[in-house]
Amino acid sequence: MKSEFSLAFDEIAERSRLENETIIAAVELALEQAYRKSVTASDAQEVVARVEPESGQISIFAEKEVVGEPQDDRTEVTLTVARELDPEVQLGDLIKVDSTPSGFGRIAAQAAKQVILQKLKEAERESQYKEYIEREGDIIHGTVQSYSMKGVTLSLGRAEAQMPRNQQMPGERYRTHEKLRVYLLEVRKTARGPEIIVSRTHRNLLRRLLEMEVPEIYNGVVEIKSIAREAGYRSKVAVDSTQQGVDPVGACVGMRGMRIQSIVKELHGEKIDVIQWNPDASVFISKALSPARVSGVHLEEDASPEGRTATVIVPDDQLSLAIGREGQNARLAAKLTGWRIDIKSLAEAANESIDRLHNDEYYADLAVSLEADLERVAITLSKMDEGKPVMPEEYGTLNSLVNAVEERRLEMHEAELAERKAKLEVVRAGIPFSAYNLPLIEADILTDRIRNILLEADFETVGQVLEQLSMDSDIILALSGIGPKVIENIHGKLNELLSDLPDPEQFNDENIVVDETLPGLDVSESESLELESITGEGKETKTDEEDEEAELETEDTSFAETIGLSDDESTGPDYSDDSEGTDKLLQSKDKKKNRRKKRSVVFDDDRGVFITSHSHKRSKEQFDWEDDLEDME
Image 1 (cartoon, rainbow, N blue to C red):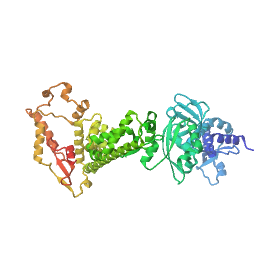
Image 2: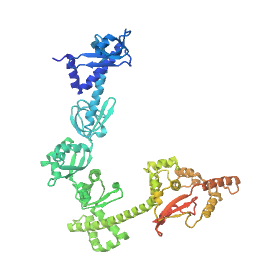
Image 3: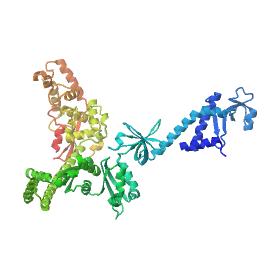
Image 4: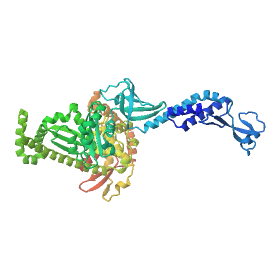
């Protein structure tokens, strides 16, 4: 027959769902602390507690020193008693002796109660965390315990879960003791136990429900390619079959729609469109816009996946159905396919095509070949405007005209894209490879304000900034706090920074020609121009930082216009008669001459080679990086 201790031990293990070893370890640690407190033992003294779960017997073993005559029974033991435990022990040795005090059971129970409870709580929290972290991303069942403005609290049995307001389905009402199936979104480990966040709006909730209701999906015969969901309103699911002869849409819908209806009921009436996935993007987009009928899809690829655009032509009576209420159908189709979708009616597309054929020279030859169709299309469009019936053959003529013009437009777009890629390759060839390895945050030659503006615009390296300046500086110019003068300063400073970073790999090619002077300008001329730019009368002298701050305050008006000064008053100080000022500027000029010469790399189309040019200082007569890029074009 089991003892009361054994029964209580089993009850604790069953209630907390903990391993027996974990509970025993917590109890033994609590008993050790209780013994130290009862006898005021030192922390240096080793104390070990032993618990027998079956009998409930408690034993305390304390480490003591073997002496002839003990002065303190708590830390010392006689040689006779010690040799009963270990015959080979000697004086001065340390030995563990059974030191269980009389009546220790009651004392231990009182002293160890809080410690045992605390250890059990910690172990139970860890057990709950491990249990639910493994189920993260699955569906769990919960019971509504309470609800408030902040969210809904669900009881999961051993633990509680929170469903914030942004994870609740719009229009869904929750009642106390109502059972729900929710998606386990996240499990956070906190000092007060695991914090469990669940969701009813996540798209993977629909994925898990389909896996539960459709055996073909669970077994892998039918694969879910993508899901687009607006919780509480409508969802689209693209499925495909991995086994020939299996209808993926029919498997998901079920006989008489029983499978999909059970999911709709679980989601409180949310509409679900099941679409068969197709590797052909045009076909896939057409099906994604169902239930609307599509006349044609024209794909426009861009350099980045986010820039892919699909122009969809639909009959006029299908336009509102394709767009959906508040654009919902088109929005879900775009999320499902990963394409930006531009929907046009057939009449609108036909009018745009006619306008291109008549006004764009690029379509001149196409307009000649489609001259007969243009007359019939004009008649058809007038009939549609008047509300007269249109024959299917006339719709076919409209479609053929629109398709021909769209194909020509896409050809032109592809040509422009290829030209841009070629230009980008030339620009990258002229930028040292080391520039792409130099983080922009380390470019101390720029001011902190300009560097932070560029970093916020997702520029990471110096090479990316130089590349964008060469390809299209207007993008950087559009940033807040950037003006034309700042653009020029950024370009000059970054080139100056790169001149101190040699890049042997970039210039090992035999077709690179090194030109130590600027084309049409020798070093002596460059120095004279530099001196004139410094000492000339009426010249305004400003630092780069002053230019940047002035452009931050006003970009479209001059500084003189802003403060209401005349042209004479707005000019800088005249140092022509001031010998002291001239001397200071000449000293500044001499320091700049000692700097390492700047280097720029450009591609000469006529000669078919790369040219590196060195100069002491940029002047108005010298060439500019952007001017050189225009020559390359």
